[in-house]
Length: 528
Image 1: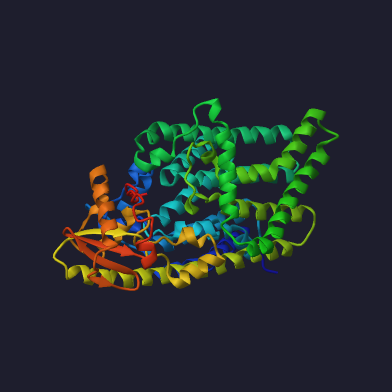
Image 2: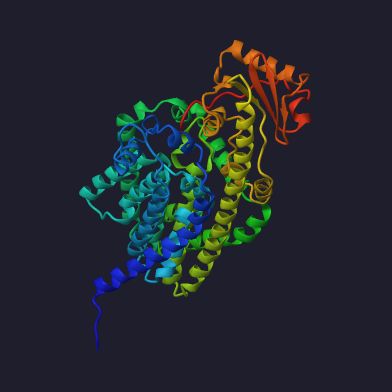
């Protein structure tokens, strides 16, 4: 009879988990790569090579990208290497999860880890050709204290260092740590760990979080500037405490409105089942401890059990709850994937303790995986259609402007979304946030950079934000309604007024309605 070395079995299992996860993440990433669209800040980084991460509090992202391409004086686009490396990093995290929670089935381990990088909000993170890898690094280091490091003082300080590194790659990844700390607490209850040890471990994790945040603020946070600094202002007074509740409601509303009613009808019962299992497991622990602990401790355990889903939901935004004006964007909601993954891991652990088959966890996680793959495919199609749509408009506009003697350009309005992209957005509301429009609209910064791909040496006079210039621009737009156009297309009308090429985007009734004198949008101010 042959005997297999346990280490050999472990290595074989690790390889299986990694390969399965890499294939699953490939299904999610392929539509994004096929669309091949520069995403927001990628526009300027690919064209000009600016980094810009240092001012956003992400110096290790700058260091990583410079090292990858032997940086001279400007960045260049090295995608899809960065995005492929990002999903390889996520697959590696799945291997760590399988080891930490002793999940023997490679398919089960892969499926419960899959939401970390495949959940719909993370589509934005994977879309960045320059940022995707650093965001995955941030998630990896955020999970190192829980998945890799053991107990003890040395492990505690190494955990602080890992969290500090994570913050320097991408700050919102800290919420993944908070979610898995909560999972650690719940899994310890399944093992009937003593309540005193539970609370002690929770205190240690809280200490790691607070110390790493403090060190980051002292060393890096003071150098953050621009729009990130404005979005990072925390509440200062007790009178600001209601803002925490308002922020929680805004994040909840943001997530709720990201999907249509039908999707919530499909996946809502599955999410409710995960919450019920988590509460049932915690209440079972409280019942088993009832005869051994004081009344006060028992009450605390019951309260902790009932509040577990609430605590998990609050971990999704994490420290952003205490900001005066937090950023509401898909890319900061990394905690959504951590919530789904942690809930599935807890379900797997609870069913194993209750002697139920792991097939229930495989079935539920497969349902989520299917939804994520479908969403990713629709997202890739929406990106690709929007890219082709705006490319056609910008190419025609470049040809029209080339025939004019002036290089001063004033854009007003927006052609909106491509028909197919708009249709997909109607069925998947989150697409309206995930698929940006680069021509016109409120973000003058991205519009200006996008047009540089087609029009060289032009003066975008909207970027002059002083009052006199804004007044002149508004007057030009109003005058264009009674002027004779030099070119008319299905997407814009072109006028020449006072040596300025005025480009009115959209339908005629929108271009020359009663609201033409509305204030012009302001530039966003730089790389995000």
